[in-house]
Length: 320
Image (cartoon, rainbow, N blue to C red; front, top):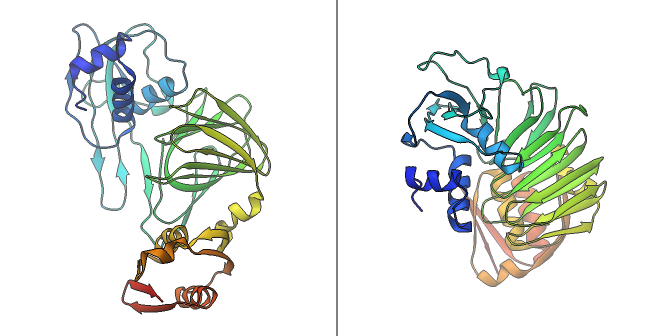
């Protein structure tokens, strides 16, 4: 669905249907360049697009009288620094001083840092408040150079284990395309892979987990898991240590289908795995690997399932 100035005006007026509202909010979260849209005339101030989205997703956005939206992004070779501007008018619209923006209309830019990992690479990121984030291979994390005075918020695509610095006065939010996680200071693992459910596993503390397309909210404690499958939220009891073992180089598959195992192995080892027989994907595995090489992993899987494997460059074939 095309997001143009007509749709944006409907959104601000509260006249969008669910499909239109979802399209606008996805556009707000997207990190690709867009053209500028003029909504109404008048004096203007600046607001960061991502911050605007935060207020909407947190259900704290009051009625505004928007004037103009400008969105700018700047790319570098290794990472993306998205500079996104919103020109808006109204008493409730302001710029958080933590972005330290130049007030001139030309230089009003905010640099959002992005860590983007290729397959085969993992990393640890320390955020401005001291929070540590362990990113799994193939993941992306976006965060501001400095958090606001009222909250801390980052955007995740992929998988990350968070050790959040405690600050009761400034809640910490992790935003994905489907869910919002809210904590004050704790340890948990969040998965948000495209085309798969969002999964939150809590190792320590108390976490709030909610989804845009679900009315419910989950409160999760240690050794509980929240899942959003695109329609509803569910809560189960799990062994969270197994769920976060990847941060220590451990791969633990407990009665997991080979099809799901393959997706994880492709990210970890930056390879493409093919199945000679699609039915092999249904086989289940219960196995653990400790900082193992790809050859060691394939050897053990082949033995467990009584199948063969062949490696050529970055391609792997599994067959009967």
